[in-house]
Length: 106
Image 1: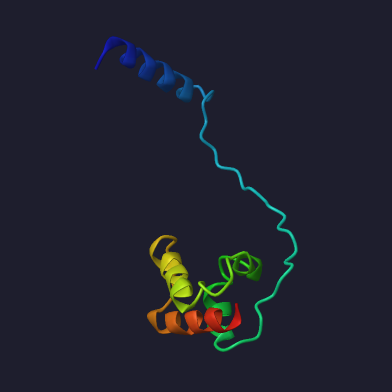
Image 2: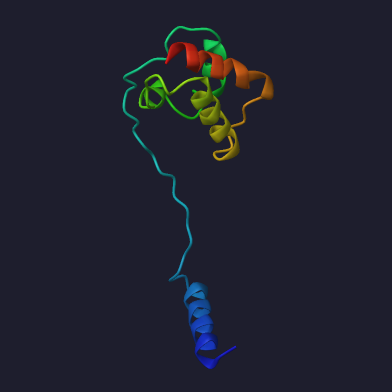
């Protein structure tokens, strides 16, 4: 270790020992806005409410692109992304139900 790194570590250690440096986590409170959308009625809506609504509101789904090219393949890719990229704990048995709902409803 170089001499300057040793002095830096020693200085930080001394500050921490006398309480000038603290690592304290304080709770953070957020006031969430009211939801402006609801999950539309559709096939397998319960699977969506049980899996998707835990992380985001229906507002998020309504911001997704629409049109003829956003078909079942699009929604399948979105659900797969939620599982593989974001770690959504969706049971394999519910994946097709969610995709069916999104395809039929949005």
